Image (tube, rainbow, N blue to C red; front, side, top):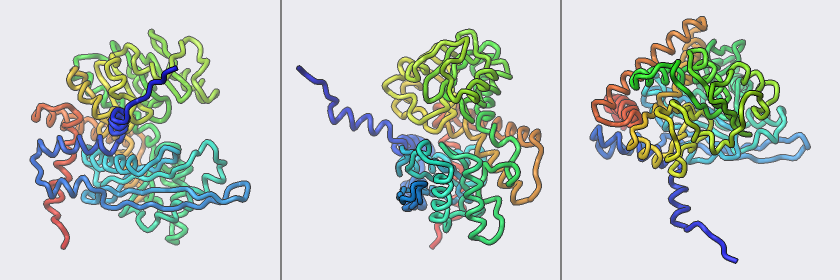
Length: 429
């Protein structure tokens, strides 16, 4: 009897491909080469300004104590306070948090926000924790990183497995220590605690707007366009709903249990209602079920990976059939897959542009909290559209100038802005 093993070289190659920080660094270097940045500025811009690792002891419901590991990485302060989400997941690791913090720097720069990039995470499995345990975890983690938080220092937001309630706990914990209510210390809060209208839909709306602008470049119309959406949450589900309203045919949606597909188009409102009631897409009528690993290979015009990192890789990129990819998730396409898509002429609207709607409306929320004056949803959505369309046009112009992909164009545009501000500010001595 014989067995087949994967060689260490192949394993390391795949491990490097799936490392988000290495992917970010490679794209950074390509953009920096186009800009002819000197070595010193490259070192400054690629290096996280601060990395904090904390032990987070939590009293569990059974009266035992467990210690979790938490991180907060602040990548860059040049443009303003750090901005970025906090995720709770067993898959959290320092390289991932570093990469996500750097992407937030470039994302904020691409859309012209006065923020730098930050990211946080705690290694835990929220599915195995009670609401009380999650609250105690959140509050202790907040207390342990509080010295580097603040409306003018670092402003967290929801991310994977965190939500409005998580942000409310963070805001309350910070406020209790400051002895005053500090609504601007986080964004993505409930409306009654200083949240913004339009925030929940913002990332999905940004995806929809990015797809619309990209289709114009490809000469396609929404009513003639079939879309596969990986995911069904705040990004994928809301993005699919908004695209459905604009006339796109959404043929597939997915969750962690699998995907559903109907070549003629799904009734997206009915799908999301079914998901809310049943907690999974499995069993939805008028659709066939498709394994998650096959969903991305379905025939479509537009593919929206809006679920996880490293969804499109060197292992499956050859089976991707879409003409346009709009990245709703952070880091859904590996560097190796990116090169292949570029060679094939597949347009990719990169994550640092396509999903920047969320951080843009987070910025609006921060501004409203600091003013103590809140806008209507119509104003929020209008201003979001103005910023997203302007950013897309600028990235497209840069990509044409440097004869690059939209992704590298976005990196060039973002890095150039940060580097310019860094040169103007100088190095403190």
